[in-house]
Length: 351
Ligand SMILES: [Zn+2]
Ligand SMILES: [Zn+2]
Image (cartoon, rainbow, N blue to C red; front, side):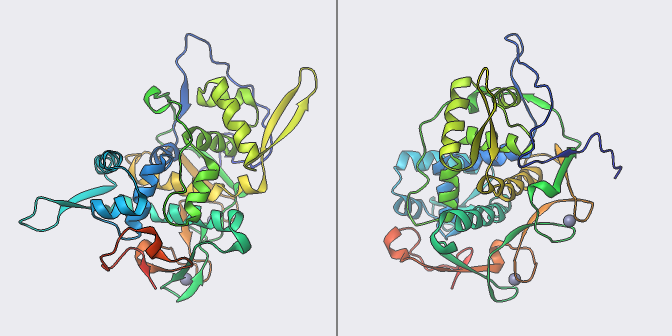
């Protein structure tokens, strides 16, 4: 790969960029950068959709298992299961040849969300749980040890952090018009339903789809209100609201950079910067399942100098972590949270 430094941009955790922001005019339809993170965010930023997928990782397959585990209304559950089937995350399988009833099984792309869940879980354990201990203890079957998986470079297997990662345009780079249907303002979602979960806590801190995208832009170097607005085509009142919320949740710190008139910039805190790993896993999933072989961005790791794919690896043995090779111990009583009672083999396996 050519080291065209002009085309390589730093994924920065703090440094404000001295780039003039294009000012959107009224005549131009708002556009946003093409980025595979957005397709994964589209799935995980809806609380019910996320919770249904989570229950599937705990072994739920049947309508009643999802319903009782989450205390979700039949109508909402039906809608989410349909949507997830349409999006290829679940497939419908009949109970038996004679039955017309169906179960919902995770497809390959659904199971492939597991490393993203692991990255979010570790973030939640590190920052949002007491004493660095989340509700689940993970055991990696590969090395049979208690594992705290990390987001790593596929080439050198070392942990990736924002300041050592650069990106450049990939074959699918460009901008697309803002999809108004995905841009409606929603009320705050409740990610905290059902069983205790560090993934829920992480998603609850991040918030909704807009907040995800604001954080993403921070990793691309945007620190100021007008930069964020220009990059995302977001309405001022929504951006104001999301920035205030993200400051309150400790993702950004607000710093005055000009006195008259008063202007502020928004810098990722150490907690915010640690969301890099989960966002990189979302990008990797989107690249694999939504980009049709045309990833909008290529990532480069400074430590090894190579173009890489982010992977979640066991922190003990360095092997990639998959749903089928992880087990877990629950630090809570699962009987209190409904869900799967069938005793079938579940993914991942419980110890
Ligand atoms: Zn590397
Ligand atoms: Zn291991």
